[in-house]
Image: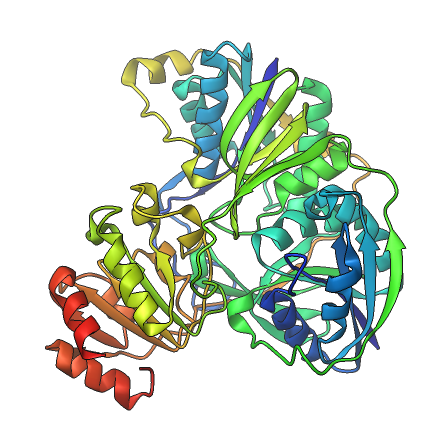
Length: 249
Length: 311
């Protein structure tokens, strides 16, 4: 079985982004970029499935500018077998991304697609569900445990009420939650090796022929409203007095 | 006029308050008709409950095969079918809404507007990105709008005095590719974290699962729900459904009392709509104190017992 992992290049999770003064976007020049953390978990899970003998190839795909090759190389250094860059110079919204991924899915015919539940830049949490819908295959979102057996996946999902387990027939789309695994660190020799692995580039236009774009217009970016500065108290008595005054206890 | 369809979330007995918050958001759009859609394998109780939400005209009660009412694809297909007469479809931005609504959007050929935090007009909304570090104003130029509603940003409305009428539907084909197996729930007797007026939470500083017991005790004394940071959940100190933050629950209690939470941005985004944030941490430089309304530097293992005594 082949596993396709879709990843996204995003501003590193440790960076506190700033909105540009003119409200046209967030400042990303010179900012550290990384693989979206949820997608790193997706890569790790695919590698573990392969290492357990349940898959024979892990293909990683991203949609982005040529710079996104860095993140693909990192995925290859982690252990993915080959990579595909769908080259796009403009930011894509979820439906176009899902449509482009559908094209890759149809070409690659994977038995399983794994991707992060959301990208930590736009926080949309849409693309995996959209891909599953367009592909007309089952989805298991927010997965924290995954077992493959007899052409099916038993997926445990982190939902508001607790842990829900569902069974989906393969092929399927899995979206990862934080506790699915802890991604491995990349070793230096693997980085060298990754440079020789196959990385194909195709143009976004060749993956979304006939796509009717219904992008939403982003009219403005602004910083969030700051909370007003609070007070420090010195003792539990003072704390209790404050809470009583506010009528909270 | 806008016709807004709202996907109701429920547990087959009661309607989740997030549904009411989505109704509140819909009511901020002028000149609307608001209808609900509710899925269940036995709609008899829950359709009646849905009708009690004030401001709702019609409840579409859809009977599914056993267990299928929780599975995204069957639900999404039915919503897309019924939606033809509507301009908007909303769902609360809970794990349920997040699972289903992008499927609806894909079926309708639309992008979804995720986590609406403010309604500007019928086609313009504000939503957070980058864990709440930025807010964007999004406008849809399309006939249909598919969106999830950030529940912490809207108030729960009247869930008792409504008198909507029911239209019955069925989904005949069972889901064959997806099967619900089980739900393992913390099933606490405490208030629901997402809607509680008071929340007591702890982070890595609590140190162990056993130590979390004092947090539960304090919560019980206050009648509060319990929450946790990602660090505490990852460390196995408490169940995952207690996680508050960017990828966990976004909450807006009147009182958020947190112990041993340093205040990573990913956590802060989950609490920034709280009424009063009280932080107790032994590190006076912890970022949590930058957003706390009341801060106290000290050892939580001394402070919690003292608090228990004095409140």
